[in-house]
Amino acid sequence: MEDAKDDLVPLDWDQVEGRAARGDTSYLRELGARLADRREAAAELTREYGRRLAHVVRVLALTRGRDSLTQLLLLLDEKQASTGHHPRFLASLLAEHQEPADLAAVVFDRPHSDRLDELRGCLFHELILRGVDIDDFGPLRTWTIVRPGWSALAWLPDRLRDMETAVDFPSRSLRGSARAGGTGLPTEGRMDPPTPRTSRRSALQDVATTDVHTSIVAAPEAGEWGGHGAWVFRFDEAISPEQVPALLPTLPLRCLDGLGPTARFEIAARPVDEIWRLLFATASMGGMYSEGVHGAYGRLWAWRSLAGLSGTPEGASAEDVERHASQSTWFHFEADAEWFHNDVCADYGIAALSPDRRRLAVLAATDTD
Image 1 (cartoon, rainbow, N blue to C red):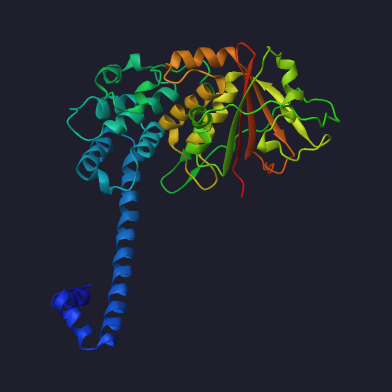
Image 2: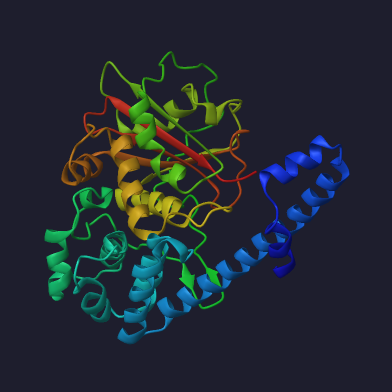
């Protein structure tokens, strides 16, 4: 590194240009090669510092107690942009390993003149998802009043809702992590249509707007799944939930292209809490090449997908989304179509029949190469 510095001291634009003017281009090539080597060496050194810093931050986050929390917050406030960890990831680690009372006292009960509001916002929802009652801790109750209104997380409910049950979280240690594998199609609630199915295609067309499509795919998009699609169909008359299993394979769904009349198509009616759990896992833990967006934003994007699927109007409150979702009829399906790869827990389809039974929305997601 000192040699590189010595070489660079006398170097200026005029000198380089003068060498070129005199035809000494071989010198410039050699100089360029030396600079490229030293740039790569400096970049590797920077990466190594980053790895070490990230490990120090992780150790502080996973070491239980108020002292480690205090030191972590001081470090984050002073060097937030350089620590190598996003606040949503740190919030997930803290919620997993620290006591709620310590988090409330150290993270939330402090002056709000620092730069850690994003961390607090994420941590607040991480704790809610883990069943912490904010009424048990004054600083958590206060956060609902003083939190910044610009945060997208402020839209979420301040209490755990009935459908947000049996939440899956990853498990992290100082040097490793593991996560749940999800669940496939259940045996209960099965409504598989008899085969051979009709080969006649429905005349219905996808009517999903760009905004609705974006809302429906919010969870797999956030989790960086390999592929996803969304479709919405409207009927002139109400249909019954019993009609959905036979209707789905006839619709113009790209995820079911090429599905023959005897190919596997399995479908089950599911309660809304299991659909929410699937969407949450998709966003929060991510696909095979992603670590996801963790608990707080996983919660947000699961709600966003639920809103699009249930047909809740854009800009509605979380209470409106919950009402629409709880009154909808939900289905989970899998198929031996080319779009799906049928790897365990890496493919799924969701269909939602609206409360008036005249709208059917579909989300398909795959996370295979």
